[in-house]
Length: 155
Image (tube, rainbow, N blue to C red; front, side, top):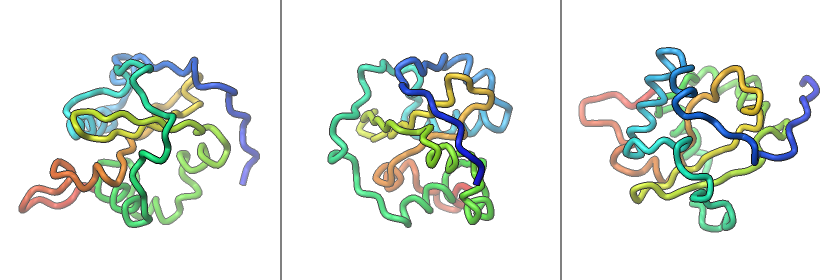
C-alpha cells in the first residue's frame, strides 16, 4: 500500500456549498445523489446547520453488523459494483479511512430517520465529489429503503 498523505488536523473549515456541490456532479452522480436525498425526505445534509449535528454520544448510534453494511453497499444506489466491493482495499473510500482522512462521524435525526454523515477531510481541496451518502443499517430497514413490489433491489 502506498504511503498515506497527511490528513488535515481539523474538519472545522470543511464547508461545502450544497448548490455548487450538486452542480459539479456528473449526470449519473447527480441522479444518485438526488435519489439518496429522496430517502430522507429531500433534506440535504450539506444545507443543515453544523450546530444541529450530534457527535457527543456514540452509544446512541444503532448497532451495525456485517450483513447491514453489505446490504447497504450492494442494494442502495452506488457507484460500486459487487465486484468492486470484493476488492474493497482498492477503493478510494477505504483508503481515506485507513489514512485518517475520515475521523469524525456525526448524525442527525431527520423526519424520524437517522442520517449518519462521514466527514471527508479531503474536501478542503476536493477535486471529485465523495460518492454517495452513508445511511445507518437501522435506516435501511425502513419502508422507503425496501424495494417496491415487482421491482429489483437497487444495485
